[in-house]
Image (cartoon, rainbow, N blue to C red; front, side, top):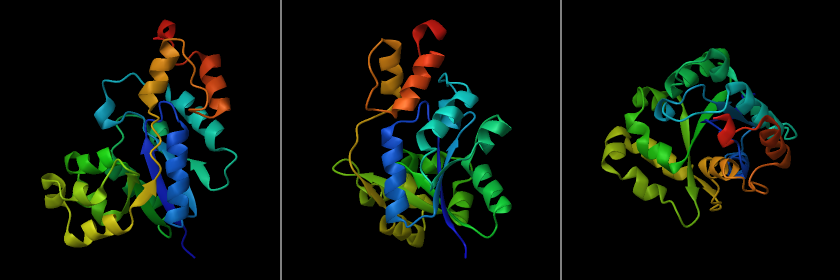
Length: 211
C-alpha cells in the first residue's frame, strides 16, 4: 500500500519548535505516514542570507527529530548543493519513489509567493499542497483569492488547498529571532530542543565572533 509522505522544505537555520509543531499537525490532520524534513542547500529566496553549514543544519535536524518514528531528515538537496528549486526536488522524489504519494507543506508566505517560483504549474500538477493556517493569523481562503495566486490556481486546486489546509496554533517562533538572540548572548531555551540548543552553543553557530 502506498505511503503518504509530506515534504517539509526550508533552510532550518536553525530548526525550532515552531517547525516541529507544524510537522506534527500535518502528520495528524493529513494522516501522513512520514514527514520528510528537507533542508535546502541554497534557497532561491535566501541567497543573501548567511546559512549555517549544510552539515550543521542536517545535524541539528537529526538531533531534533531523531526520536520521532515518523519524522525523517532527507539531506538530498544539501548533498547535491547549489540552488534548491522545489520543482526539481519534487520531480526527483517522485522518480525515486514512484509508488508513494507526496504532499508539499507550505507556510502562508510560501503559498502566497508560489506564482514567483520556478515552474509553479508543474509543481501543482505533480503534488498536493498542504497549506499552513496559523490560528488567528492566517486565512487560507483570503490568500487563495490574492490576484497572482488566484490566476495560477485552477478551481480544483484552490478547492483542494482550502479543504486540506492544516490548522496550527499560533506559535511565534522564527529562526531569525533565534539567530539574533544567540548573536547578542541571549537565551534560546524553550524555543528549540535542548540538544539543538547545546549543539549551537558547542559549535558557536550564529555567534557574532564566528561570522
